[in-house]
Each structure stands twice: as C-alpha cells, then as structure tokens.
Length: 223
Image 1 (cartoon, rainbow, N blue to C red):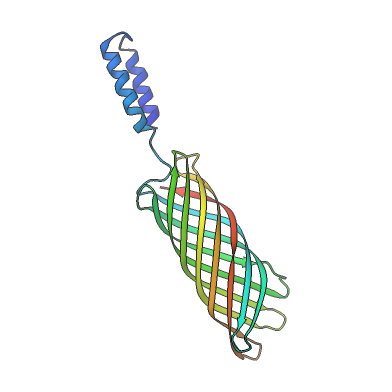
Image 2 (cartoon, rainbow, N blue to C red; image 1 turned 180 degrees about the horizontal axis):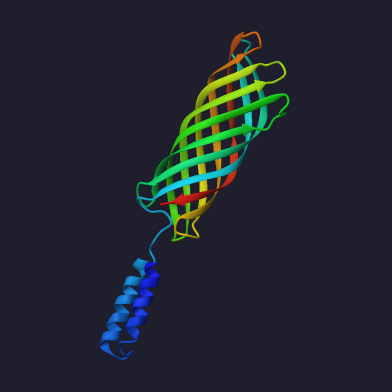
C-alpha cells in the first residue's frame, strides 16, 4: 500500500513538472532515495503476532524399559500431529511463543489406542527475511503427556514427561495477514516415570523414550 501511494504521488507530480526542470530532478532523486525504505517491509518484524495451525506426520524410534525386569524393548511408531501455536516478534529476527501439539499414533483401532499431547515454549530465529518470505530455526521445550490403552486386555500406560523439538521452517505470506508454512523437525519425548496398570489394577513402573522426525504444513494469521 505504501509503495502504491508513493508511485501515485510521483506520477501525479510528473504532470506538474517538466522533466528538464530542476524541481523535477530533485523530486526524482528524493523518490529514488526513499523507495528502498518503502520496499523494506518484512514478512516477520518486531511486534508481529502470528497464530498458526497445521498438520504433520511423525516417525519415531521407540525404546521401552521395565526397571523391575531390566528388559529393554525397541520398536517404531507413526503419528499424526496437529500443532496450534502463537508467536510474538521480540525483535526483527527473534520470536518467542507457545505451542500445543495433539498427537495420535497409528494403531489397530479395535485393539489399541495411543496418543500424547505436548505443551511447549518456543524460541525462533528468523535468519532470512523478505517482504513475503522468511526462514526460521527454532527450539521448543515443555511438558508431554502420553496415554496407551489396550482394548483387548484393558491394560493402560500413562505418563507425564518432557518434550524437546528442533525445527526448520519456511513461511510464505502472499498477503499482509495470511501465510503458509512448511516445516521439518527432530522430536524427542522422554517419559521416565510412566506407569502400567492391568485390568486388576496392579501397577508397575515403565519408561518410554521416543526419538524421531516430522514434516508438516500449516497456515498462519499475522497481526
């Protein structure tokens, strides 16, 4: 909008000045000097507030440990992630915020159900910026809850632990307020104090670790 106003004022002025006149040349010089500042509006700036939502696919290697039997088991897991976030532009390059991730794991719906929720604070560094595009590196850290239910023997695993994420993302803003995002990241979920409960109510300790990556897309609303 600023650029349009500048061009309009410039063209209007052209009608009132002869190209050979000193006044026109001064106007042209001032316009050329000022134009780079008008073009300097960035897709991420200090004071921006950005809301985000998306969907991601995660792949994990898992490791379970039973401290009573000293047995470790390794496996893999695939999950769908729904991230909901808010970010505030602390500077022109650094953003801080918070994110909630709703995770549901692939399983036989008739025999088992597995899900976890992550609640994280985040810090992003937007290392490359233009008027419609920026790239970022970020870290996220916070709490995580995990629930697994075996629908056949009615056994359960519940845990509260921590999550850590390291991400890289690219953000596109074709308009002033609406944007799109693609991202990839490394995820680590640690549940040191998990608990297994069988159908009779007997409880035992169990540890669960998940390490893997995800790739996703999202939409953003910027104010």
